[in-house]
Length: 436
Image (tube, rainbow, N blue to C red; front, side, top):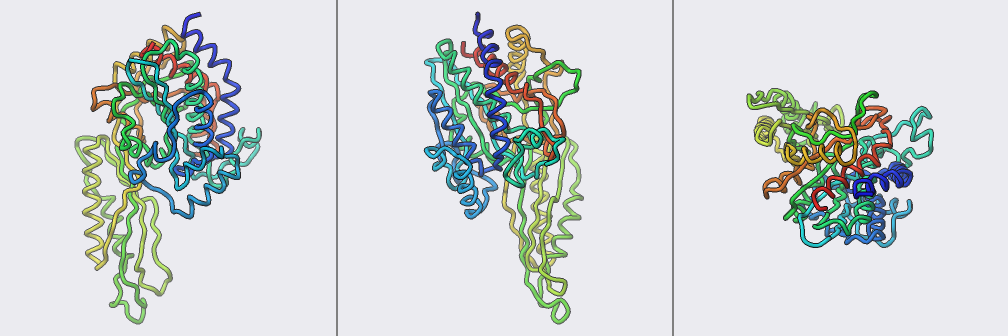
């Protein structure tokens, strides 16, 4: 039996274990920077497998994290993680939202391959109707308002499966493997802090993936890469004015309401860019305290996107000028806080070709006719990809194809769990082809 046959056999044998682990992560869903139970369990399992394990501030650079919740929220979630069975040895390192885990396997001289698996859930209320499989089979989220509605429970599980299989063939590998379990991908908040801690320095290959829907009659299990994800920046915008009585002394106030309204109308009027697609969205506005009070504080959540990093920067600058100008026009002040960001990404053709060849010729897995999937969203794996590529390395962001019950971020989201062993095979086969 050759190594590829061993990989296939072992991935199939551990499939029930993968399903059970995915369902555990799904049941105890944790949002970005709250993945305390999840991180502790991953760290425990990697340690038991024999990996060198990094946790806490060894993973994410603390002051490079974006969109971190309040200390009160973090403490509340820490206490819940402990109550829900977090590993006592490792959960203590996650206090304050220092989540994420890296497992390292060193097998002598050779290239360094990093693999990224995101682990966070979304702020979605999961469907409770029994027509929804997680509700029917008892693994629906017990954490109200948190749900794995984008498949990251599967991604974390795939990473553990990859770790187990690679450890079993370590004597056939030559080089270093880094398995990066990344927090806070949703809102593109987590990858930058890992890159700034130096974990992608010296990496020759980076492989990431995301589960993606496919047609019922499509036999393919993977698209080897992705391109075209939009660069993005997410902002919390605050307007500050002066309150006053709306009837008795309106002239003494500085009203944030017209400032916000002016900003919104002009943000949506940003001229398009001939170099490619651009996006602007004002997602939420919270302002005011009463109908007879001049509003003195407002918070607005916005995002800009661009087909390229340069177009996104164009949108950023335009948005900043509009917000500052709208505030000044009405005697108010403004401040903008970055809550998340990502670059545009493009997978390397050579690594995509390698994934295709390994799957078709060695693993005998059907591959999509499409080599690179276009993505209209944004992904902060782009930070990791860019760091590797600017060092002369190769990176790809694969699509693990599966049948999904609803679109991503929907309360009825679920996926065919055969994607779990399939993905383990693709990752491990590609790593062996590089390091074997």
